[in-house]
Length: 187
Image 1 (cartoon, one colour):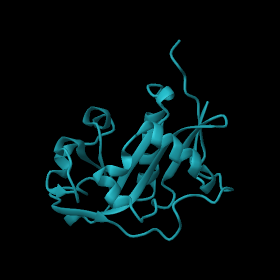
Image 2: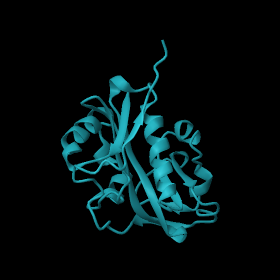
Image 3: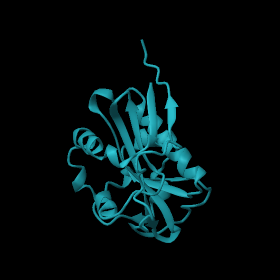
């Protein structure tokens, strides 16, 4: 069984190890410029656990998406290499997007593999008028409207957003964001 819960401060060392294994070179990415010095959006940093082992992680960050205004930047999302292909990334994406929508966020942007993210509703057409503060392959720069029209006609530079009041992660005791999910593996 996979348990998705709000990330806690105690998750940090395992999270960094997981991301180093799953996404080598992640600190060199353009989106890292938007995350550097920032905190994840409150309540939008999640860890996926299989027993006592961290198997996946995702975070969302506040950004200003040009003329569209407030939005979230998704990433990085990572799953242990030996657990990839088991649906853990999909569980994390579904959970993160549902939580962002429930919290009233209007749009999510990311840079990633278009065929993977298109199944969640992301499209590069929604970010066509937006720019990032560094190089990016345009087809990988995608957006998702959680509220219809949130990215319609958006233009301009994406910038780091407001710093959340908290640190974006749970101090360790709150389990309100815990979701128990049974992941059935194909036989």
